[in-house]
Length: 226
Image 1 (tube, rainbow, N blue to C red):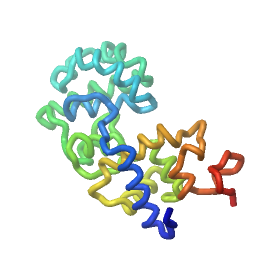
Image 2: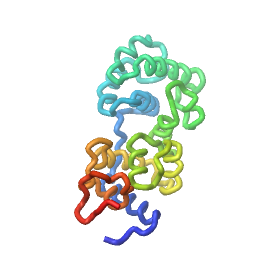
Image 3: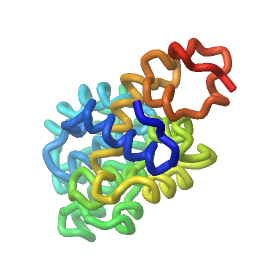
């Protein structure tokens, strides 16, 4: 195996390995259009994608577009989404953003960061997911998996989500951002979790990772902590 001597070498190797593992990157949240994706991503805050996907069928049976959602009682929305957590705040945000979409955007989800981030309950990461996955506009939304792996792989210092996003955009080719951010998430879930991290299975971290994080871990054969 050739030596990875520069950060550019490491980045190219990481991209190649992620493409090998995940040639297809379906969006983990079930949706049918930009609006249902926006709502699903909002619900995913501090909630697993799996749980969101169990909740959204009932929610979207109630209303699956802004015009229908805005006239629903917030209490009814809240009752459906309660398993996702933070239901008082999320239900109010879904109701209000639906009204704003109808009154200010003709019922459509806007395809720009400024307008998206002005919506209730929509932060920069949520806007990034919608921009990249609904509209195909290059973005690099950073979740906890990407934050963790960018730090483990010595590609960012891990001090802030904002810094991690800047580093990811600087290091990775723009045309790969939309697919790559999902590939990193998939890898983090499968090979490099926050708990139960094992360098014998996390082969990317084992090869290019930050060794100062390895203390007390079982290392791949031939590796030593330094």
